[in-house]
Structure formats: structure tokens, C-alpha cells
Image (cartoon, rainbow, N blue to C red):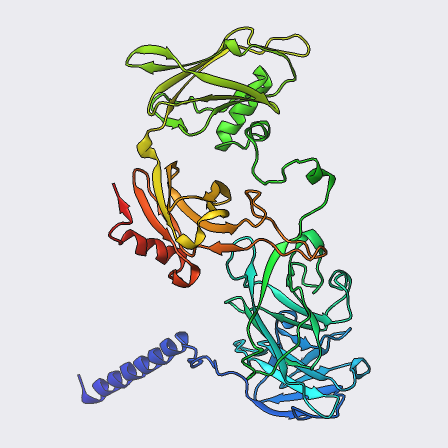
Length: 524
């Protein structure tokens, strides 16, 4: 082969490779990297008119930033003190934000303070400008006094972090909180504390609201309220003699209805009868089976008879039968309860009572025993003269080891008839009695998390009493326990109820872990 021919082939191959590489690179185009996100907040370049003006009724405020901004969650973030009948408008225009105020609503010799919180954010990454506040005065000076305090949920004794504090002129009566907006508003922080700054040297009526509707007005029984018995005069920030925190005990105003006057409970807890009628007791399948049984037989035995091996009957509660027919006759002698004692059937001593459609059988249960309930033919008749069906129901009781035990050592400061120890599990009350001894022992408790508190029962009626705004009655005070009692089956738990200032302010989860590691907390 000639040298010329070899060179020609080499040039052809080189050209082919060049074209192939060009096509391949075009087919695999990779977009350029956009770089890191710009998470720097907007920078305020100018504000017109300037902040902190005197003798001015400011109608328009214009803010200029170094980047494009938008307004986000204005209703949640904006605070105005004092409130106006119409809120200011806040709009964004590219890199500008304009605030407009109806200057005809501004009062003479008054300091106004507008806060937008985190409402101004950049339009790409929503990074907030953060806590913008603008102050001006329509008079020749700035109001510089303040009111500070804390909010406590009266029913629990714990800080209320969702409350709103509202101020009214001293001349207003208590009905003002029901019908008109206040002058000043501020929300409590995450510790339940608050400060209202820039106040004039005037007395105010001050309330704390759990303002569910967000209208700054007390909507009666739907919301909670706290009040002070006296008018409040603001103080200077450095006045230590007058700056003691105000304490509001926020409570739900008791309803005055025919239902309550008749003594009908408004508890959310459903009775066994209601559960059986609605089919909501236990699992959905069990509820439906009981509902079907009620339709067929006219009653439901509230016991789990699905297996003799399953321990389901509580040994600290009675057995109930929900009656779904209006009875004309009940023969309790034909309601027969027995248990197995080493192969011998023994009659159980029982007390049988009927109330509000529920037949209750009270007995001293033996742990881990098989019980049999017999409803003998003719045990009950309805008003039409028809007999309710007889039945036989077999079930097993729980063991003592299925429960836990708690021993509460109560500080000597809380002993006496006026101190009620209240122990609860979720929404269920477990124990509520006066503290007469240094130690309170509770056994046969369901495993789970328990809480407790002490009620100062001033009127000695054995329960916590709420307040009444219009009767100027404060709620009874409650001393909280900040921990959680994590009770396990078959274990005993010891805990000290100390004054709040001597308790560890741990979260419930951390508290239970700390207690588990204690030398004397959990033991067999």
C-alpha cells in the first residue's frame, strides 16, 4: 500500500472520530449549576418617612430593599398598638413595600407602634426580613411605659402559651370585652409571659384571652378568659418596685344552661350504655357485634367473651349490662354470677343495681379466674310483656400483675382538707381526694402515662371550681406537677410531689427517663 493511500485513510478516520465526538457531546448537554441558594435576608435600604417621628400623623410608609420582596402571612405577623378601627394596608411592589394608614383614625398625643414580624420575605427563598417595627407619635413625646406579666392555665397550673393579653380604657365595664375590640393587644410568648411596651401613663383594665376566633373579643363559653380585680397602671422598664409580673389565671367561664342546672353531666366521656348504643365501644368489629346483639336480645353484656384465655375483665370495676328496652320487670335473683375455683363452680357474692338503662353487678373479683354470667329465662320483661332473651357469658378476669402501683409522697406544705391530690390518665380522672397523710398509695392502675396536680379547694367541695368574670370570682388555684409518671404493669413507682420551685422543669419524656434511672423509682 502506498504512503499516500495510508495517509488518506488516516485522515478519513480522524475526521470521522471528530464528527462522532461532536455529535456525542451535543447529545449529552448538562445544564449549568445554578449555584448555592441565596438565603441572605432582604436588606432595608431606606424608609420614608423616617422612624420615630414626633408630632406626625403618618399616612404612608415606604420601605425600599435590595431585592424583590413579597408579603406573607400578614394577618398572623402584623401587630398594631393601639388598634385602629381599620387595619393598615401592606402591599409589595417589586423591591418596595408600602404601608398605608387612615390618618383620620389616629388620635392626638398618642404613640403608635406597627410591627410586621416576619411578614416581609424575599420572593425566591422566602427568607424573612424579620421583626420590622415602626414607631411614631402624634404628640410631642413617646409613651414609654409598659405592663408585663405571665399567663397560667387555671385548670392545670401550667403556663398558657396561646393566650392574648388585651387592654381597655379604665372607664369601660367588663361587658366591653364581649362587644368591642381593645386598645392594645399582645400575645404571650412560648413561656406564657408577655410585655406590652409604649403605653401612656393611664390606668387600664387588662384581660387575658384564649382567643380561638381571633377577633380580640371574648366569645363567652367557647373561649377562656383571665382578669385582674384592680385597674393596672403601666410602669417604666427600670421601676423594680412596680414591675412585678402580673399573673392571670385563665379559665373557661361556666355555662348557665338548663342542662347544667338539671345536673346532667356535660363530660365528653361516654357511658357504657351510650357506647353500646352507638357501636363505638372497643374495636369497630366488637362494637358492631354488640349493636347487633342489642337489637336481637334487647341488651348488651359489656364483657369480652371471645376467649376464656384472654384476661379482659377489670378487677377494680363492676360488670355492666346495657339495657336497650324499657323494662316492666327485673328479677335480680335470676341474674347469676359465678366463678371457677379449681374445677368447682362457686357463686359470687354480688350487688345488683339498675340506673339509667344500665344494670351494674358489683363483686369482689378474684384475679385470673374464669367467671360465668347467667341470665336465666324470665330475668326481665319489657313494657310490651316480652321476656328479654336468656344468655350465658363466660370471661376471665385480669391478674394483679396486669396493673401498676404508684406511691406519692406529698410535701408537708400541701397537707390538709383544702388540698386535693388529683391524679389522671389522659382525660380520665383516677384519684381526687384531700391529702390527709404524707403518702398516698394507689394500686391496680392501668399501665401508661399519668399526671397529677394539687387543687387548693377553698370552699371544701371536693372539686376544682372555675372562675366567673362578672361575679369577680377567680378560679381555684392549682399546683402543677411537671413530670409524667410512666407506670408499667407489675411495677411500683415512687414519686415526690414537691413545690414547683423545687421540681425539675423537664419535658414529660425526659422526666420519665430520668425517673426510670432513679435508685428508688421503679422496683418489683
